[in-house]
Amino acid sequence: MPSASTSSASAKVPGPEAAEPTVDKSKRWLWERAIHVALALCAFVSVATTIGIVAILVVEAGPFFLEVPITAFLFDTKWSPRLDHYGVLELFAGTLLVTVGAAAVAIPIGLGAAVYLSEYAKPAVREVVKPLLEVLAGIPSVVYGWVALTVVSPAIRGFAKWWSEATGWEVVVEGFNAISASVVVGFMILPMVVSLSEDVLRAVPRSLREAAFALGATKFDVTAKVVVPAAFSGIMASFLLAVARAIGETMAVTLAAGERPNLTLNPLEGVQTMTAYIVSTTQGDTETGSLEYSTVFAVGLALFFCTMAINLLAQWILERTRESYE
Image (cartoon, rainbow, N blue to C red; front, side, top):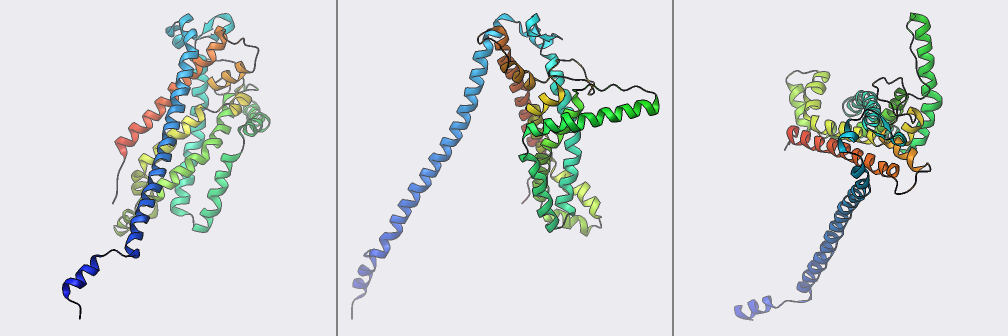
């Protein structure tokens, strides 16, 4: 019969089975390290790309701001580079008009659709309706511009004509107008509002809904007074991201709103946005290195600061209103 010391000694000797976990652990460490390096590289590429874009804008816009004072660029009310007028206010007003109009279309419709899909729709309905809404994001922007030019704008002019004849109040709608661009851009950003808002609404803990129902609240009260306030930070983030998307829209706005700088808040008139100016200038006969060529980068830099301000506002709202649940 073997002694106890012999048994314990033999038990401490590692066999083939004991070496395998060490090898597996080493391979797993190498694999996780490779994934870590790959993800860090992706983050570095993203940051480097952003820095590179900003650097190009600053370097290329430098000659413009050496010739044109920053005060003239920001506060002059006329934009006509060929006549030595460089006031970006006209382009900013057109961008603001289209963006606000698009938000007025997308936000109420998108939030209503998100609440319906999250709180009221049956699973079978949600599985059909949500993908159909997201199909709107896959339609090319030039198609939206063509629809605005051939369908939306004539319909608005027809309604304005009927209104003028029925009431005696003349309403003039230009062929290119900001309201048709606002409508199509609003539907372009609608999938973003619906998808993000619906996700954050469904992320609200079910316990909050059950607690409200236990207190005798109706379905509408639970939705309006519990679920939507609890998801407010995420909903606001979806709104601001959609607005940033609307600011950067180019092709649909160029086709629908026109290419005439106009300092106005009347959506029935034609306007030119910052992105539309960049498109029209780069497609023309502008000489590379000229002052007019530098205006493209100056406007692009102003557009970058606008979108960055919206992103910073979104982060500030998230930090102020974020709620965590266990």
